[in-house]
Image (cartoon, rainbow, N blue to C red):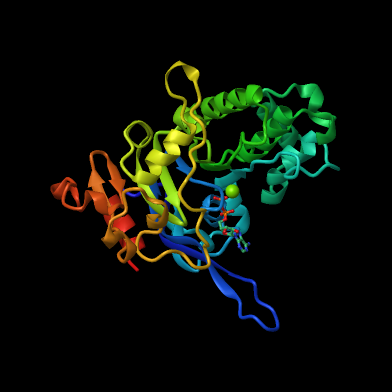
Length: 338
Ligand SMILES: Nc1ncnc2c1ncn2[C@@H]1O[C@H](COP(=O)(O)OP(=O)(O)O)[C@@H](O)[C@H]1O
Ligand SMILES: [Mg+2]
């Protein structure tokens, strides 16, 4: 069964640091990612800052062009869609509602924008859809003529959400949608996103560095390290029974253990590696407390372990061999051969 959104062997590279005297270097932001998102599902993508989450989001939205591989929406490469048709089907919600909303436009005009871009609607019809959508996201109608500067962070994010759903898209890509908000407001916005998904049958790609947020909203979770998926599976498995040493480390750093006491941030061995010169073998090996000699030379293939798919040499020989050829494992493995 193919998903509503498919990412196939994606690589996204940037040229950085070029000058008269120095040749530009290649930065490997996405380094062979394959995944498939089912209609109505919430797939979260987690990982440290700089691991490639936003680049993946921007590529899924057609803002960034893949160096290799492709993104399919309903089976069609996104590059084959007309810009306006793509925008009607897939919409973003970004982290910062301060910079993503034009301060000179009213709430009405901000929310109406995607409808104007799509075209073909009368003014009256547009205004009716805008007021309906404001109600859906919990914005009072009297705010229609307000400017973003007069609103709170939470209200601005509601405007951004209204703008994302006004064309009634199929897929929403949320890139850290609550990270810039006060903790008290975060839960309200998360609940709103959860309600809207049910009411409008939306599919979410939900990007976050905060596992407690992801725990609340996801069906499945993919963990990214330096542009590669190291573990993907149902939320109960990845967050509550993590297999990959990196996922275990990440989980220890953010999930609240019993009685609401937060663990201190772990001190990882070594810093985050240089994406213009990624480590050979498993990208995580220089920081991994379980690293074996093979990890320095060979990128691990993807193995099915329980309900998850894990790319780690520790599981070679321990994995459920008969399930080894499930499509997702094969996809990750294909994306990671180097
Ligand atoms: N337009 C760009 N030009 C050059 N490098 C970029 C660009 N966008 C992102 N990067 C680099 O790609 C890597 C991944 O960045 P990003 O996708 O923003 O990570 P995340 O969202 O997980 O923090 C980082 O090393 C970042 O510096
Ligand atoms: Mg980001």
